[in-house]
Image (tube, rainbow, N blue to C red; front, side, top):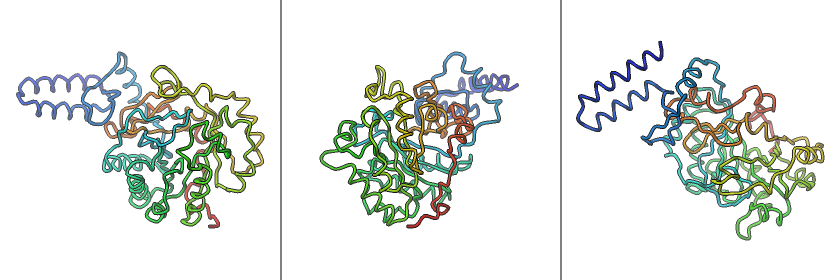
Length: 363
């Protein structure tokens, strides 16, 4: 029945187009057809692009998906709205292949769609999220999500190097959690990894941001990528001194076309560690109560990741396979192509006290 309706629609569009002599009217008709048909058009590179690409066999897959009413709820979403960064971390798998950033109002429209679909937590990342418009674009998104959308949790992951106190003064009240990435407390190791810029001390930046978080009542978190350069370190003393609400450690992950492979801008193979090495690092720091380990498997299927075009990224096959943009087909249609495993998300502790009003922290 559904397929028959599509055929009838295509016939109607063809008949209308035959009688139309103006290109802009033809474009309007096609645009209306795209909206009605939703998932029939697959893998548009991004908003505003006219060229539609659909591989052989996609219709069967789409029809099968369209009958699936059990789309996962996007309760927690990671939005990588920019690829640009001022650091050059050798293992990064979201590198600056483009400088594209959605216009502010389009980004807000997408965030509103996510809220309507069940989003409770949004995490802004990059690239470096403070690099675009010196953090003001990010601040406006943070304010919109907390004030207008009334999301329970709004968080950011940053390298910390571009954060200034005036940002906290303007936007700090709207932010629940700020995570700063720090892979080592040895500056030489940070230089080897690429987590540095000029002569600035990454560790000193980290401490300064921690102090601002306390002053402006933002929960402070640390993220660390465990790789061949830091896997033997003992970070217990420094983590206990900084006292983050969470210390999340990730196993170095390879993504085809990003940090490994012919089309990649980086080669992260020298950073890779084994599962056993990652477990040994966990065991060494097991007495740290705020420790949250994330293995590669958890990374691939228990995170909902949006790219700069607001497309969900399926990383289960070791590469980034994008859905269509939620701005084009809606959240429910797009999220079915995300590879997101809601059960794994819950199993890994994806839901936690993520609103600073619930944390009851001693500021």
